[in-house]
Length: 267
Image (cartoon, rainbow, N blue to C red):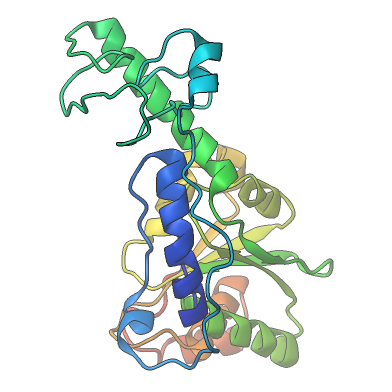
């Protein structure tokens, strides 16, 4: 899943999604939020693509000779991604099964074949971390707290950082997530800060829950939640007041009480 924050990124990530789908041999979702999908946005003119589609691991005659034998789901490189053929290339064809199969694509109900398929898919998920778009990180050596956001929460988050710095001298770092599965930069960002505020435009803290599945217990203790789900696009003041309230600022606690239902999401 890749997550744009602007019209420009929608255009570029749509192209990247096709490359990733070919490379990883799996569906790729471009996750636009409602604000980006329905409202009017300004953007520069789009540039025509300058590089060809990345077709990923295609079997060639030379590769087949090197391998000796080929199986559609045989993981010869250890990354969970098998070589494939496409119609018209003159190489072996295969039948894609929706049911149980072995590494050669043959029907199988053997438990060891099923386990191997599941393990291979897990290896491919780990490999995907190296291919998906990297986060955009703005590190601040003065900051004890960090923000994590995604999608169009970007703009309110950036403005909130300015408000916190100008109004209360609270310094922050910022991590804009652009893809899932998470990359190695996430754990490093959490380690570099005392507290992490995860900013989301949903009721259930969906990103926070995904992070808790992967982060160690020690890292989980640093996580805080800022939620906004009152039907309107997220605004900077909602983030600022919620963060300050959780940081123990009395002035923020007074303003937080006047916020619309659903904007304050501190745990």
